[in-house]
Image (cartoon, rainbow, N blue to C red; front, side, top):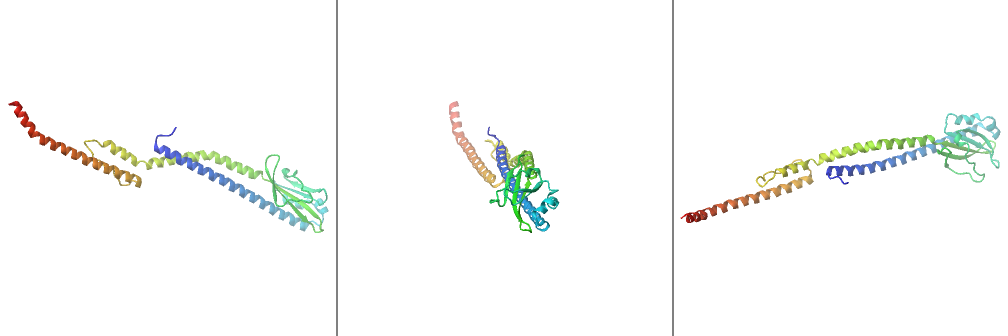
Length: 267
């Protein structure tokens, strides 16, 4: 049912437009946060790859050193619960030399020998979390090649985005309620001059057409309307005065003939 009050209509319309705008802004903010989290995750993996590559090139001479002294690489991962590191040799099929880190990253696919994906891949864990994974081939000082698989469980990022959406949908109705009340109050205040029109029109009668609208402080639209109403009242007042003057003149002109007729009738 359409509201009959103009202030309510305007308030609801503006509130609906603001609600649409807020929803669009929230969607854009969600996309921006998600994108920044993706960039941060990729930067973190690149940085961790650089640290691992430096440790391997400086601390290991051969593959046997990785198996015998894994603590050097383990120290790169311990304390970072979201990371998982797997080191594979160059044999066919590849053999696992060591694995350390998050449980979610221990059952990820091993690439074929002739096709190692470039860049990063995003997978889905068994628990529904996003996992960012990348491969890097590293050559040791002995000339042996190894394949490093590094993954990051992005559960914390998913939790952050979920918490953002939850808090947004929780507080959004309250914001819209406050905005709607504020818009209604502003519109009602802006339409207050219309009460002056109602007051003046209620005082106008055939005996009293002297009331006029006060134009001071009115907005342009209402000022034009007030000027038109005042001009209309001025013309009506003039016409009523002319009609009253005509009635008086007519009564005066008819008074003498009527007296003569009445005198003759009495005789």
